[in-house]
Length: 514
Image (cartoon, rainbow, N blue to C red; front, side, top):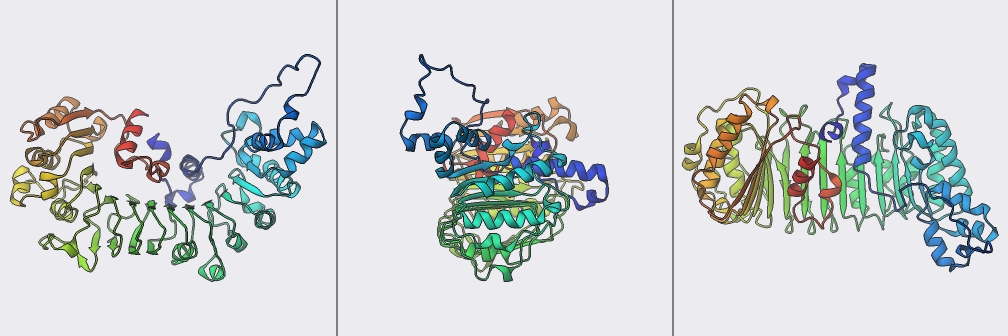
């Protein structure tokens, strides 16, 4: 699953037709995987029930509200066909809030794999449905059309969606090009509760001056081109917004200045992070930031946490990033015990570390001291092309001094992409020798094809690191990976699902199972 769903955008592939096609497939696969589900029956097609004795139509005798409930859960073709049964059914379909997923308008053989050749028929069918149904529109997913050639139809769709009160809207353009402009009139729809946009060029901040989204609770922006400040404006105009997802911002570094009384979860992945500031977010619980790994390694990312008193889950923090807590810049040698340099509310922390780079490893202990109450620690060992730390053994960590949360609070730890390198072994030895509260640890081995050691050697190193484990009751497991090297694609659905206490742990288990 990871290879198909890794945020794949690379502008260098755009000039190569084959590379561009592959890029588009991966991009769309990732988008589709992370879109919200539509409230429809999605199993096998219905078959006609045998008529009861005497041919009586008992289904039509059911209460009107119950029948409308059934219609609202049928794919649009099946729901529309009921209008042919009788005048009562025709009235029912027209009075039922529309649920439209254009993937159900595709030929049956390609129901899950739309192609550019499907765009004309699907676009025409969507236009007919939106014109014919009087509304309201409960949920609309339009993801199958290549809209560059249908801009007039797109403008008409947005007009109809606004006039007929759409509540949940998913609108994805099939590449290419990537910069098809989205009509600014979309941002005048005040009935929206959920909005997901994929592969568009968004209107500028000037188009948002009169916008208001009084009911919007979820916003997803996937592989969009936008001006700096657009996201800030959207958040500011959404007083009940709880979930913000951004994937693959494709026009340079992403800058955000978040001020929101309602946000609970912010997830940004596959993007180049330039300046992310949480200025005031009193309800923010989850902040998940995954930098675009290939293009952003040398970019100095600035992360500022000014006011987020309920921040509980934070990752993937990288030592190469500049972290500011309040007005304090976190760097080696600072007094991390100062209250102004601590994020004491964080219980779940994830770090992405190159254990072969001395400067990265030096920042790890500094970062850990800024999260004194962290109880779950998730580590991803990133690939290091040019190691600069030959002596990063357990002695290095002991000289750095004790880390209070490692000694007294960490009870769950996962370590991803373990390769058997000296720096990895040294870190694990240090944790195992000092962590008194540790109850469970899982070491996920890197794919053997990406390590300098054999499977047996890497396994021995993982076992060796735990030989002097302080916590005698800790459950330890070593899991072999068949995945390609590198961090696996993040599941935005899991990240925003508050029924999962620890989304990092759940994602690890799900990916290994796949």
